Image 1 (cartoon, chains in turn orange, blue):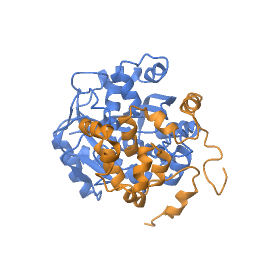
Image 2: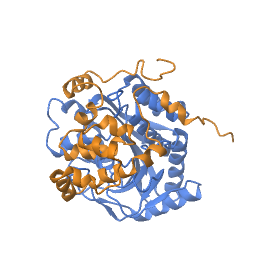
Image 3: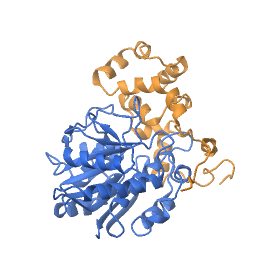
Image 4: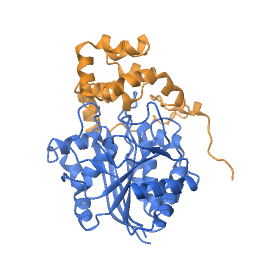
Length: 134
Length: 280
């Protein structure tokens, strides 16, 4: 049997506006994600809210990751190895909806983003491939 | 003998669970979504299975941090709804059919699927939202549930082809279980959505509709689709649709489509839902 449909993971970089969560990025985000999953306990959410910086300092995250958490900069956190399924725990702790959290990366206001979704979402036209520009 | 009688596919958006839990299903925003599930809530009354093999993905609630299994079968006697950052969903505990879970996992390994066994975990919205959509808000779920978790988060995920073969293997495994059981396989997740980056909010209705069009009677058209194509066309989280292929393959060659539904949006996501009965 031929082992078909292999392709280089570099192809993933060809999708516009997207960081695909690979095994390497998973390792880069490990300690950030350990912090995120700690927020699945009410007492930890309380401790984080009481002193965010001190809470973050318990984790072996990079300084950049800590600062991006404090700034709630999800775009930066994704660049630093984050994945939304982990990061959304921060948003939930803040009482944000998943839609508001996702909208914060989209370059639009939460209201503009919500309106775009009600109108059928963002079209894939022109956003499939950087190379093909389709 | 045990037999797979039907399959259901549905999106598992967490906001849908929140709308149910907070009594907002008749709100202007949510009503058109929940209308799409009126059929299945009636249908399931006459077609309640003994066991559902529920194919879903864990959203970094129990898995994905320290251990990242490609395919994992839940083995515990019971599973609590996970606290995903806002407290546990007020839904019943999920009870497993441990004998069938063990049989399926054993047969899958014999069939060369390297299955991970999970002896303890909580289950998140990926598993509980489909149960709520189909069964409503009962005091207890009316059937046993075997959680089957698929990695669709960390790339590379399994391919569509691999998922198809897993579905076929599940079918064979269930058929060789000696107890007389009515088993359904549910595939959850999707449809198109992307939750990150400047491409966030991507919806591809044309892709989604074609997927639903082909799944019942021409699934072989969908099986060879590459992971990259799912990401490009349906968004980074749209690759959850490979879990619908597991459900479809588990039903065998012929199915009768009893219901289909498609609606944009629920939160960030295109909602899709189908109900199939197995012909053989």
